Image 1: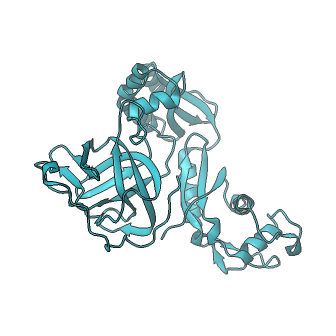
Image 2: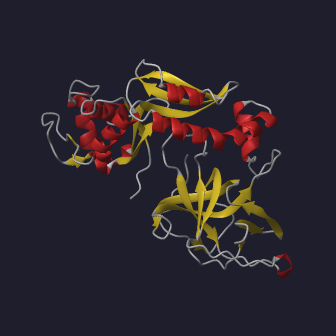
Image 3: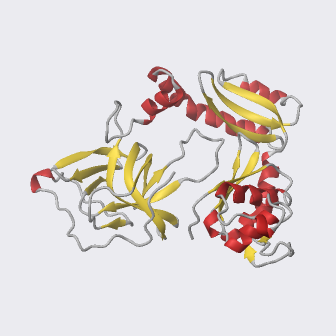
Length: 353
């Protein structure tokens, strides 16, 4: 996901948009913790996710509830335009007033939405200290293709996974049942559970992955046999608990220092935590994933890494003046792998305070 950066709240030099009296519904104007006075129509990158309204906080979530094999948190707090949003607290629905006297709604909590948004370093204290995304445009989903509105979740699932809508609906109806079954299986096979999730291709299945080559317990197998779309797989190398221990040991790079001189591997001038965005466990790949912002790594440190024991160049003089980010991330991965005993993948991510 990419979005234009904004490090300060929008200015209020342009008067807020005021709907025509005929357009106002008999509902209160939205009064969430995070709101701003709009200065223009939708700005920034288009972001698609799920609207979630929890008390006086509105969020956009990117992770579907059924994607259990991923643990990367993807949530932003919505800063909505003041004077353009009406809110029905009884149904948790929004009504959006647009320029041109158009009113769009209802847009319900839990519904797929798209926004034109921008975000940077600002976080919302009353809304879980999540990063704030400013948006002057929010569009609810449609069951048919539209230039401005996203497809609703079932239609988008059918399109993405190339199945008929009836099959997509069947799977959505099964998700809650299968998620409960997966939770039970994880309790039964707690010591061996390595990963769990869903396959969404033509062959649909919920799955639990166990460490080692031994078959599952009789209790676990009997529970799995009760569901046609549930499988137990064996052969994982590491258990989930071991990956959690490695993640805790890594501590997002705290007390892990990168060299600033090729001849001084123990230099403590740069802590990796200053460049780590987050870490999470990929349950499908059975590995720890670390997100790093390469722009936070000082040039001298990047040079030393590239020419050091785990780098790609024999000496400082051979390191190019412009080092590709992918190459730097690969070198950081080799450094971290040397200190952890589990599979690791380093990816690029934006660092926010």
